[in-house]
Image (cartoon, rainbow, N blue to C red; front, side, top):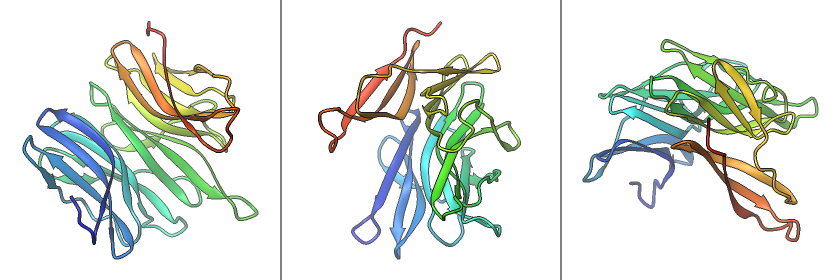
Length: 251
């Protein structure tokens, strides 16, 4: 993978089986980042061609695999339409090749997708940030959540994760099809759970720390949800620490 002239930066990994593993990220080529995908077949890693993201910086940040012919990866690419700087870059592998699938693109700057999850019945959710500039020229954002319904991507409104200053860093889908998000809501909750068609906001552990915790990674193992991230302890405002929490046993 890569060399000293075009080093690769891998950002996410997912497995459809022990001999079918995908890693995605980006490589620097002539000072421009370009998305990459690598596949492990049990013996070696092989680069897989991706649809052109257009000229300019582009990356893949997340990947999810349901089977060898149902793999999704997401990130961002230069906008193909006037009025935006970037747009989501969502690609699907059907067992033979990668195909780009168009998405909506909210925000004056555009939407950057950072994670994707595929459920047992094929439902697909992606998360990221909807970005724009303030009146003073600064950069601001809010959480972006999208769902692929089998034919197209659409934004999904998650209560309290739909205003400026919110974020969603990761998404996971349980074996029963429930969708979990982690990040920071407008009202302080760090998790959202889609159950029975309704979003529920969940506060999380809320430890007594000076700053954080920053909720970053999310996975569901058996009947528990696990989250990992970082926090800054109250007696050391310069150095962060690793952090993890888990849910009670899910009903």
